[in-house]
Image (cartoon, rainbow, N blue to C red; front, side, top):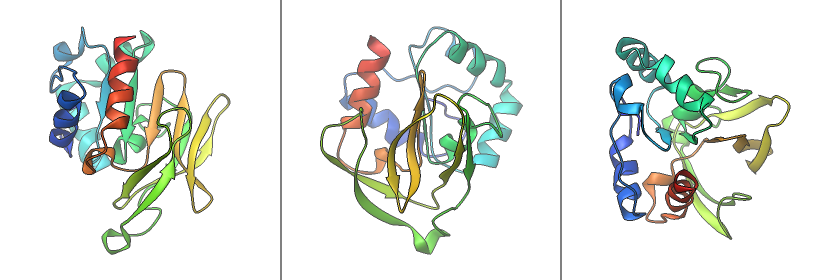
Length: 178
C-alpha cells in the first residue's frame, strides 16, 4: 500500500478484512518482497512528489516489471498512467467529471473483477482519455472508461475503499496470492 499521501488507511482496513497483511510503503526497501501494490487516491501531483522524494519510482517499476499486481484508484490511476509512472498505457483527464461539488456515486459493473454491480464513489475523479494496445476497458460511466486493465495493472477512477463492499479488495488480495 503506497503510503506517501492520500487515502491509503481505508485501503489498509479493507485489505485486512480481506485476509491480507498490508504493508504501508514509504521507502523503496519496503516494496521489495510484496506481492502487490495499491496506488491510492489523493492528489496525484503530491503523490508523485512523495514518490520522487522517497526515491520510490525505481522500486515501483521493478515491482511492475517482476509481474506483480498493481491497483491504482482515482489519483492512483493518474499516477499509474503514461504521464507519470507509465505502468499502463493510458492517458487520463484529471477532475474529468467536475470539481468537488460534482462528486457522485453510481452502481456499475466492473467486468472480470466483481460479480454484479458495485457502488462506485467518484470524487474529483479522472476518466481515461485514451488507451494503448492491450488495454482492456472493464467499466464505463457516461461513455468514458473508469476501470481498465493491462497485464498485471488495473486502474479505477473511483474509490472502492469508501464503501463497505469489500469485493475489489478481496479480488486484489486473491490476485496477489495467486
